[in-house]
Image (cartoon, rainbow, N blue to C red; front, top):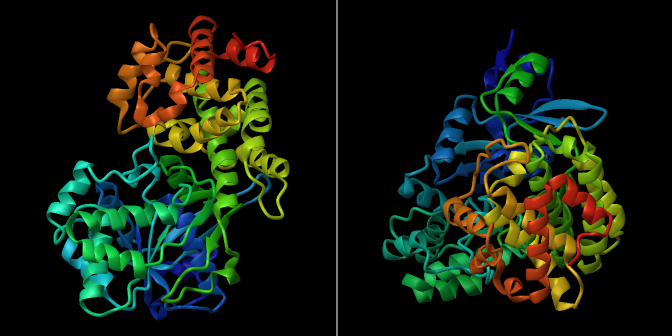
Length: 494
């Protein structure tokens, strides 16, 4: 018989899962976090839970916040279990469940006044966010904040009743400024190079549209530390809920599954203070950029590389893709010959050893991470995870046979059918536009590369356009498997 997760049932839950060693009632909020998804609950919330279990910094608990319908659904689920979460950590040889209690509340999405009031509370010293790579209103081709986005324009026209995360954070900062209070630090936990700088650009850029003086104050007074975050965290569904019930006897409305490995590298730039996260394993460094490049290009780029050949070959799980000899060899050749050579050195790190670690992590069958998760939102992920490596190699006069194949695989995937003829279900905010371009590319490869906001200057490279067209033609004529084999045999050239 399962036990419904709640504060009142923690003693019962403790029979099968680790539970907080601290009194939840003793925690006080110090952080407001936007985007309480699976990754946040498996990463930042875990580090804080570890720190609280050590007896430190109980005034740094989390209050959740958000603006999307999914945020409201998550709030409802978590509120029904006192904001506790079951986290199942799975390695190849072990699994274990723990209950985290670092979150003590969740602001109702849509109630801007209540959210701004909480942000104005001087006890809140950090506002953090995980809103996905596509949530920052970045022009993919230029890589800079897009002030013309309709949602940003709407918030600029009505800053007192914002609808976006950045509008709410800006309104909170304005309330602090007007009250003579020190601003909170804004900390991005998303997979974006220079995520602190990108967040700064979005918030200051939005402010400059309606209140230039506030923008100047933000530029001078608000800290935006850069950080690199890492933990493979698949989506939750009936399978995960069932495992928690069957194996741990816990009734959790939305548990989190993740790998055992986790990493967080962070700049130590918190003028209003921070929790002692180094005691929980966070690495504080003067410059996060080398770690970001390594992780985003090798791990995230690796995910993006295997997503589309696996999808086209009807492979559902990531570990199954790694069991496919052609896909595994494709990833290894791509990483070692084209991606790793253009990554700057990382302190005390061998990049080939790091790739070997990534290969093991991708191969973990316990995680049950899915190819559909990796394949979603390609219009935001390709420009951040794949095309920067392409651009770097082209700038150095080096070939891009494998990276061009990755772009061609994405285009071929967008045509809508796997190699066996099955329909593909898409999840991308720009799907209509990019599918139309992919369809046109059947006759004219340049129609896909004409997506300038995605491909930018890469698309004007004669070398890239030739390699892309050749790879796409091979996929269309020979199929995915034969094209991968040609690449592995150094035959995919024109």
